[in-house]
Image 1 (spheres, rainbow, N blue to C red):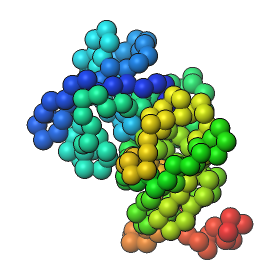
Image 2: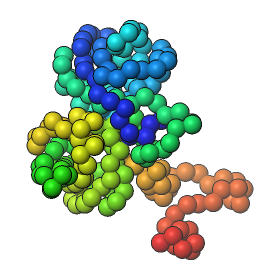
Image 3: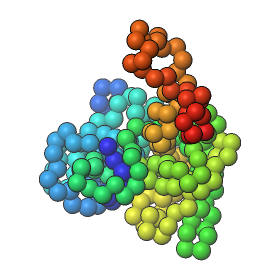
Length: 221
């Protein structure tokens, strides 16, 4: 589990084949205290398992499934990436709940300066619109951000100078692809509301059906 608060950047320094996937060697720009083989590290928002730590680098294996759903298949030697180690229970939850499981890839439609801030507009498959709400949360290449506006197949975010300085967004441009993880809470709520093919339990008092009528009766709609 992650928060979307990027710890620092890293560089892809090596790429090799691993069965049907790939293996990356990554050199972080920052010191990693007490690295553990098998720990989870989010690389541009994709949760990967880190192995083979050395003084200045570590390795990660990327499965065919991850390659098919993210931008990681476009990485080459020298690619700069956002890095975040897994959340500790004692840490502040400074961003939002991020699983590191990328939902889709979006395209940067426009990058526009607004004083010291930068407004990024994105194109996304319309079927993902329902998970985006104004002032809701979204993870872009692993960065926890607030949705400014959202429309049919599009949304925008405002980037503060601190975020631009510490993440790969500082050198992203129109046409670039980014990994998107949508709000996990919204996805769970949708499944609870829309799943109608489950068998009713024999004891009907043991399981309450969550639907729009139930939510309306209790004042949520």
